[in-house]
Structures are given as structure tokens and as C-alpha cells.
Length: 181
Image (cartoon, rainbow, N blue to C red; front, side):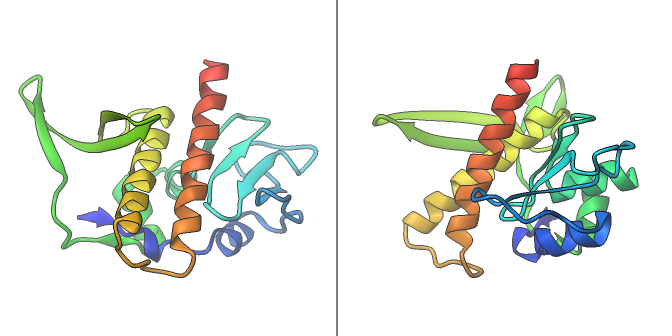
């Protein structure tokens, strides 16, 4: 069972359908709209990245992506949000698991290089916080970019650019959260 990112709706169309008209995007792909989570007087406090689907409200401080938007708005779990978006696959293989406190916990492995030095991080597959969720998106984007660089073909148009945007946006949102935390 897993999320199939290629089946996610186009962020611009999804958010316009959910919250109404958006402003013209800036050069980084961010547009503004009315936040559905709080009563915004400006009606422009909700920032949306039209490339990756990331969102951040400057009023109520909610942030995330398409899936977390549905999780928060519809009060459903991750699987329910993916089913709502039509991007859940029941037949996919399970994640790697490890024992922690007697329980099996699914993990994602994040491997990357900085200045020639290899780094490895393991992140719980079921995030318990926004930061864990953002780290998960970052890890998935990094893994997919490594696959594309190794010669795997794109599964949809501009996939590599979209993965780079997800990586950059998740990094930016993590940095914002660290600055606020």
C-alpha cells in the first residue's frame, strides 16, 4: 500500500477548486489565496507552490502539501487523504520495518552526499509531526532524483524538475519551522 505521487492532482487546479481564485504566481511558483483554516481579513495569507503543491499560511502557520492539506481539512489520516486525492495504491509492497520498543515501525532511508561525504538518515514512514512529514517528502524526492540520475526514465512530464521543487520547498519549510521552533 502506498502513495503514488504521479496520480496526485495538479496543484493549481486542486487548490483553486478547494479555496477559490489564486493570485498570479511569483518566479518561484508561489501564489496566494484565502486560507481555509482561519478567517483571513486579507484573503491573501495562504501561500501555495503551484509546482510542488506545498502550502504555508502566514496567518495561522499551517503548512504542508496536498496530502496534508486534505488530512487537515477533512480530518482524515494519511491513507484517507490519499484515497480522497485518488493516489493510493493498495497493491504496493510494504516499507522497510524496524523494531522500536517491541513494535514494528516502517522507515524510509535517506541517502545523500555533501562535498563528497556520504550521509544516511532513517525517517519513520508514518510522520508524527509536520517536520517529520517534510523530511519524508525531502527523502522521497532525493531518492527519486537519484533513480533518475541513474538512468530511470521519468514517469510523467517534467518529473525531475518537480522532484527538485519538492526537495527545495521541503527544505525551505523545514528551515522555516526550525526558525519558529
